[in-house]
Image (cartoon, rainbow, N blue to C red; front, side):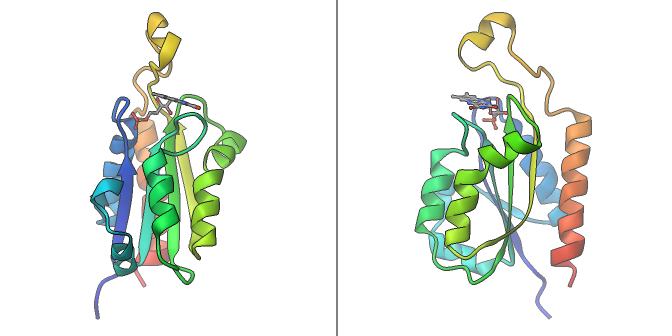
Length: 160
Ligand SMILES: Cc1cc2nc3c(=O)[nH]c(=O)nc-3n(C[C@H](O)[C@H](O)[C@H](O)COP(=O)(O)O)c2cc1C
């Protein structure tokens, strides 16, 4: 029997905060990581579980992820998860930050099974004058939370 396959679609540039989270999740899920610009939308049909993550920039995921989501073929209930790092976090903040990408993926027929957000070092704009916010984040606790999140996804959706 063929093994279930998972993919993480990542965009991360500011301090590579989200990349750290993505690498931890990819290890736990045995997933490939690809950047939106390296993906042909049809490729995603080859995977059983797809994670989409980036930093939050102006209250949403990176434009490259949103654009990719618009180009994806119908997913027929394929499972997906969302993740991000952000300057300011919290349950309702994450829900809002993720809403644009979540909606685009839902329209394409993805079932969003879980979502993850943690703090990321932020020196955007005037913050750099004060040494930035969330220095050192994601930290080892954030990475361990990301690992646990991914292992749960693995148990629920990959080991079947
Ligand atoms: C241009 C820009 C805009 C940002 N906008 C937001 C925002 O609207 N809300 C927020 O919580 N954090 C915001 N941040 C902080 C980033 O989400 C945070 O630093 C994140 O960890 C960056 O991820 P990356 O290192 O993977 O690119 C912004 C950062 C940048 C550079």
